[in-house]
Length: 337
Image (tube, rainbow, N blue to C red):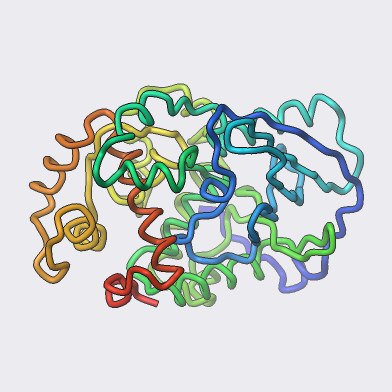
């Protein structure tokens, strides 16, 4: 393995993005902006910020560091998403057209929710959730590589540790972008991290995850994994490719299949933490005595069928919105802060 070090000053300073262009995207109807653009169960990361009706997000696409301001420009029935894009220099029309398509994919803007909405409108549990969050979609604001790094720092860590690790990585290898009156970190390109010694990553106190980050980076930097090509492959091949990556297990693969590849059918795996929450959320069982995972999997797939992952996403996100507002106190001991 090639090993190199990045000097402490290599990523120093602030990159000012001064050129600006605008995009307008038209999601399928209905569309719930805030429930799609902000997930209260996600841990905060210094590459984004959110307020009702607007999300700030950094992005690296086609090698360009970008700063986005994403705003709600329509209604739930007649949605529009207004994207202001900051960059180092003027972006050509072809780049902007490609970027529009990439954002539509990442944010799942073309998802057809009609069948799901019709089937569960009268469901005793999902029906009320639909009325609150009708038009919400599972989405990703990251590339597949970036999502994998985030999934790795989430493994076996309380929330504040994951936050610390992600910030340490971004401060060391990312780029601080200034745009639109904000300063947010942008992710590094996999090629920039390729060859960095595992010990250098361990010095950032990411522990055993350093090896996973090194191996995943190699897979992308050396052409072993192509996100765009993988999008067009069958779900089984996508899952196999993810599980073939060092340090990526069924739980991380499940999140990526849902958020990045938009696979929203039957569930295939329930991690222990979610097992406890699902037992209470769907069956009213004491989280301390959860329903066995294999039985819970059968129950949820039988109940929600081809929409199981999407239905669980709606119930899960609704739960965390309620928890954020102080209306689901039973969740407190289950969330490791």
